[in-house]
Image (cartoon, rainbow, N blue to C red; front, side):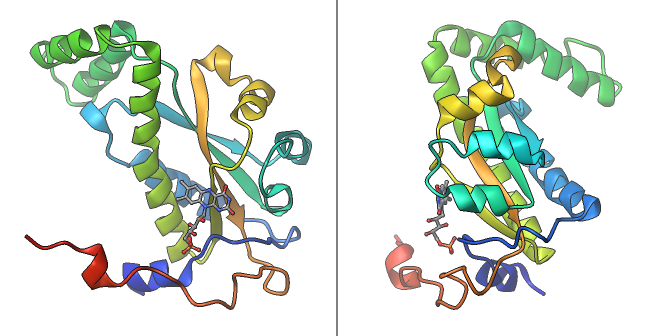
Amino acid sequence: MSLIEDLNWRHAVKAYDPAKKVSEEDLNKILESARLAPTSSGLQPFRVIVVENQELKEKMVQGALNPEVMRDSSHVLVFAAWDSYSDEKIDKVYDHHTDVRDLPRGRFSSYTDKIKEMYGAQTPEEHFAHTARQTYIALGLAMAQAAELRVDTTPAEGFSNEVVDEILGLGKLGLKSVSLLYIGYRDENNDWLSHMKKVRIPMEEFIIKM
Ligand SMILES: Cc1cc2nc3c(=O)[nH]c(=O)nc-3n(C[C@H](O)[C@H](O)[C@H](O)COP(=O)(O)O)c2cc1C
């Protein structure tokens, strides 16, 4: 199967079969694809929280656009970004980089000094606008990996960030939710999108050649 076939196979599922669970093996591949996503300066300023516990899901549906989709999914992946950058966080990431690569700590200090100065001049709101954007490549890769495994997904921004942050205690971790990814197996009889054609604008409109 090619990536294009996988992307044509997938759609944002509107009804899951609550009896079908994603295996640990497939879940780990989906999470690994998110972990391998590139990020600005390699900071990986977000985490993915895996929610399988039904009681937690029942609480998180409060304020969600598609409560039944969240409820019946096998797992909910919460993409949650750092609420701010700090010198300490940047140093921690770059110490890890140099340690993994057997380089002396501080090897990249001329670069990290520059990004510390840049983020030091910004507000936490500006930081979060940037860290939140970093999550979307990982979200896309997770969806693509899931599709290759024929695991269904629904990306979702239609939920209450306040409710999810509160229920999962994300504030204490210095994180704020950005998006959710419901994963599981489609319920073909109730998923109204299952038998519909994929709709995208034509290539000649989408691509602007100059
Ligand atoms: C960032 C993002 C947020 C989305 N939020 C929701 C959502 O809250 N609820 C929902 O049913 N679909 C949501 N979608 C799904 C889109 O509506 C869907 O991907 C789009 O219509 C294209 O259709 P397809 O994914 O089925 O090909 C979201 C998609 C993305 C990428």
